[in-house]
Length: 202
Ligand SMILES: [Ca+2]
Image 1 (cartoon, rainbow, N blue to C red):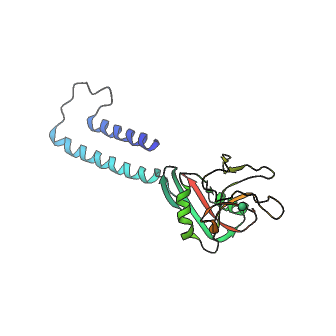
Image 2: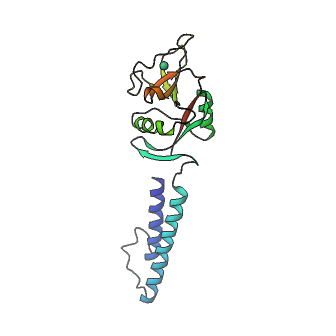
Image 3: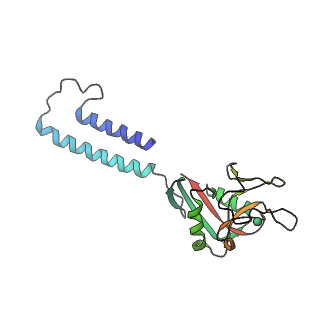
């Protein structure tokens, strides 16, 4: 919207220069312009307008950081990056994303199928991927990064998950896309080592 407002202003400014008047002045009696002066002036202003539009479009268009891919879908515009070589704990993965100005991928209905389809192709040394959701035991409620609740009946949980399993009793508290569960969601121990997905909304 800011870009449109700016471009609108620039168009108005250029038109006003070409016509020698501003909004509200169009009803004034026009001053005859010598024919031999009109064409060069209009041409130079259009060229200037085009140049300004190109420069501002380049400067103001949001871009993804290096290594990220831009996606625009029902969720909005965002950049994402899979990390499948440096396996980390959930907290380490979250810190790594923050260091890049991103967050762990937020599980949302509008984007989960995309990530689910990409995950098998992105898998490397790490085959599971941490995403942006966890709970704080003894609470059994999962939350997404940002604090919104992630219901236990969210449609992308794998069958039987979240089970809050763990050898010490219910310690699974961090959410991943699990290779062995067709990249549906599983809660796992937060210190397990896995890949991760960083995401930036722009
Ligand atoms: Ca589990």
